[in-house]
Length: 363
Image 1 (cartoon, helix red, strand yellow):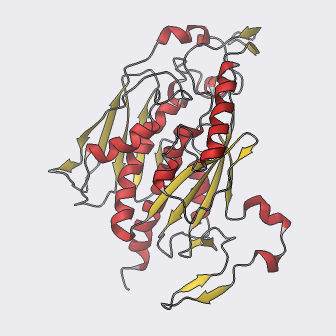
Image 2 (cartoon, helix red, strand yellow):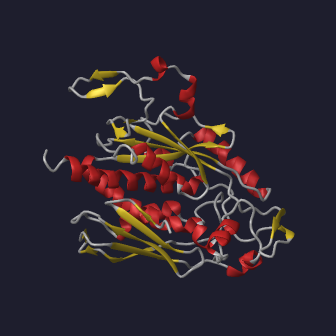
Image 3 (spheres, rainbow, N blue to C red):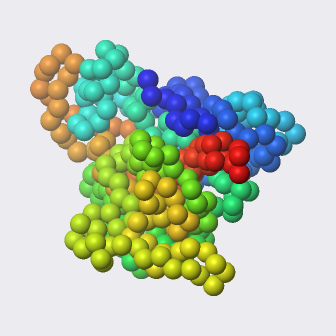
């Protein structure tokens, strides 16, 4: 199964939604990196359920425990294992799903592929799997920060038809964390929150777009031709639950431009650096980072599990109705922001180590 991500900075997640623990093993982290459970907990708190009125009411503290790979506050260069115990779950809410498949969920495909599935809370397909990603991402961000003060900021850009106009070059983390939806445009954010609340009252769900900007990205990251940086970023964020689309730079909007409009012309800045006048490339050209801000967008569908009656089938091929129980997000976006942060950090950290291994040995 595809439970491991990365080549030199390798991350393996494990656990199910209603199992005893979820967690991650990180192999390839450089030694002597200062890291603590507090560093990891900050990001897990942003991801955890029950944090606001527009997220699921499942109330997990998601308290992390480091059980290997760190000694006296420093990484050893050996595998790092991080655990989070599941505590607030009601298995009985999912009894009906033992033989019924939720529409557009992973229930039917998992059972079709493996001939068995954990139907309690979605099992491995649950977003609780992302705890391991976020924990590993916190460590990856520390590596990137120490190397080049790399800054990764994700935020909600769009909820359904509501789209914020945001300058990714100037946005701050504090602005993102200033409201429940994690949209740095306060006026649009309030409208987004109201729309999610109305959707929740109707037992339905809603989707949108998360934008991410990477500032101070090292130049030269990316391994053409199959491991181009944008290709690995696309795979990373598209592996997140409910993700359905990816754009970088101008994205699909670039199809409406001519080459002369789209090309990012070069110039020399005041301190002698090669820069681009525009950034339609989104910080990556030829699959390699050019030092400009990396800007990507990820589209997330409405959560599949809703409280409305829907038609479905059973494992015995009977057509039935299903009204899903349990506690679920009406919109995944606020909690997906730290997930996108984490996946981008994992890609950049892995490519940083690969760049160092290939290009810095003789230079």
